[in-house]
Image (tube, rainbow, N blue to C red; front, side, top):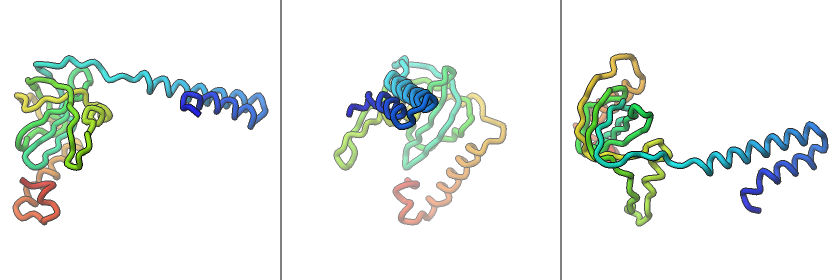
Length: 178
């Protein structure tokens, strides 16, 4: 049966299974909540984002440095997450305030090494990222000066990367080192 009939099946099944007034009310509430949840998911559209040349101030929430690239995620003043794709390593850490200037673009799908098309837009949207900037101009406004476990974990990751890249084990070469 079609998936849009699931709430109706839950309601009718509950009425016949419980055969009491309380059972009917319970199954009706469950069916309605499933229906409302399905409508909420169906109506969830990606937010409208102003693409093009922009200047954005925000806070760094994630830093991922691999090989010769860094991906930095910031949350702007409107609460939108934006992925910054940088060449080389970065000194930014979670919690830092930044001002970035660049061209905000929608993510584009790409073909993986196995020949499959990777839906990069959906992947980033599932993580709350609404756009990407490649090699923007970044002004480091203020470093985060309070205690943060995320910031400490990022510093440890960076330190391990520097330490391991001096004489890396073969398994870690491709993942962490240049």
